[in-house]
Length: 246
Ligand code: PEP
Image 1 (cartoon, protein in one colour):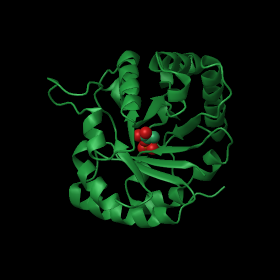
Image 2 (cartoon, helix red, strand yellow; image 1 turned 135 degrees about the horizontal axis):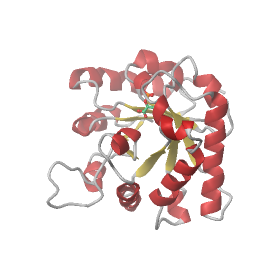
Image 3 (cartoon, helix red, strand yellow; image 1 turned 135 degrees about the vertical axis):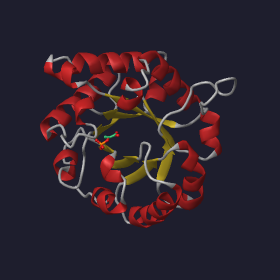
Image 4 (cartoon, protein in one colour; image 1 turned 30 degrees about the horizontal axis):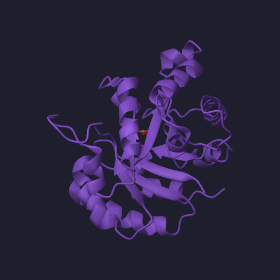
């Protein structure tokens, strides 16, 4: 069993998504994997209605950490729970780099999601410059340490981690299976060190995963699944990933 989670970003429209979710429900029914999709906020009600009674998990791509108040334009964890969301992506590289989200803000959001019984999908990953400067492990460790501040082991176990090298997201250039496995393994090791435990934390890989490379990537012991952008936007492209078998 692997996690196969789509991230639609700011794509699709109401009618297209409606058809997509109906088809997703059918495809996911016969999958050995845990299938999920993160849609724009405004389509959560649609996801709730169409995916009702299915085995498809769904959620949002961001949230604010406060429960309510004068925060114009923001969406709270309570609102996501209102739509029965299972999960929420936090610290995606587009949030970090386009919207300048800091590790501190991401940490507040992870804590708030956990307090509200939402599964955080905490994304970490290095830029191309950091990779070229051989800083990948250092950057990821800092993102983990700061993103997990004040979180206890029992809560940390509920988090889904995603290794998403920034240079691989939406570029068509995936990390090699060896690089992805090495870093996912490193993340698991560092989490065990941080929490003085021996737990098999869930770590996904994300970055240009598609029908072409899904087996190569997921046939690795430390990669527990994929967070998938582009290849999750149509059922035709997503289906081979949902149907992945070891
Ligand atoms: C993502 O948005 O998390 C992602 C991995 O995108 P893509 O699959 O398009 O690289």
